[in-house]
Amino acid sequence: MSILYIDEAGTPQKRVIPKTDPNDGNPNYFIMCGLLVDNEELESLFTDYTNIKKLYLKDTQIELKSNLKKLSFRQELESAQDRAALKASLQSDVYHLIASSNVKLFGAQINKVDLFGRQIVESKDDVYQLGFETILTELATFINTTRHSSKIITMIDSMGKTHDRKIYNSYQDALNSKAENLKVFNRTNFSPTINFADSEFTFGLQLVDFTVGALWRAVEHQDKEWSTLIKKNFPQNNSGEIFDYSYCFCGS
Image 1 (tube, rainbow, N blue to C red):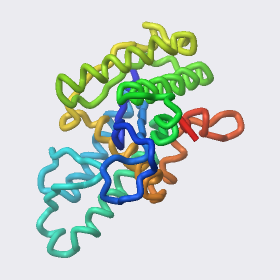
Image 2 (image 1 turned 90 degrees about the vertical axis):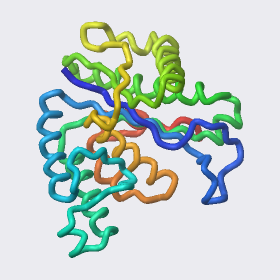
Image 3 (image 1 turned 45 degrees about the vertical axis):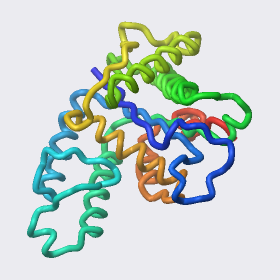
Image 4 (image 1 turned 30 degrees about the vertical axis):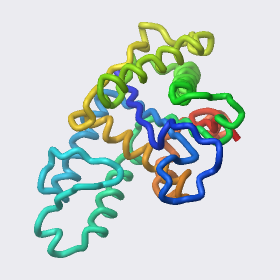
């Protein structure tokens, strides 16, 4: 069995004028990412991930996020190094763990300024639906071209009943709107149900948070160090390209 973990970065809030104020919390882009991993490899990755946390942290059960906030490092490490260096080292270890694995990544880069400006999307729900449509279409192409046979289930971070209901509806709308493109999906190899889980206790959701965080920083802050490292995890077409295959630009 394989699991597709999905996460987002940015906000789906409407934006028609490009952001100029760095303190403005409504960014130009919304990023959605999917991370597909085989169940057996997930167990191996979890062991390595736990060992990384043991190396750095007092509490090995704490949830790691790509922003690495609210961490308590082991006392002997904090005495010898500054926190910025420890965070950078921890971050590097996690991204190298992802890059060295066989996980497959899928991404949607949504230009809100362009799409809201042209009224291609008109609401937050439209943004979510477009993100899901893009990720699912990329996944369908991957399944079709690689003959991926392992059954796939989908998981996403729960953010409360009201928000989860909106996400569920946008996901179902995406499945229905792209029914022709998603014919490769069937209940034998893909469960159409989206499953909500708590990322604090769901290791795969923490991995995809790091992944979408890397894509986010590349787009919004032109920091491409980690997105470049994990680029090889995006499936490539016959020409060796990931763009418009496993990573799509939505809008100009």
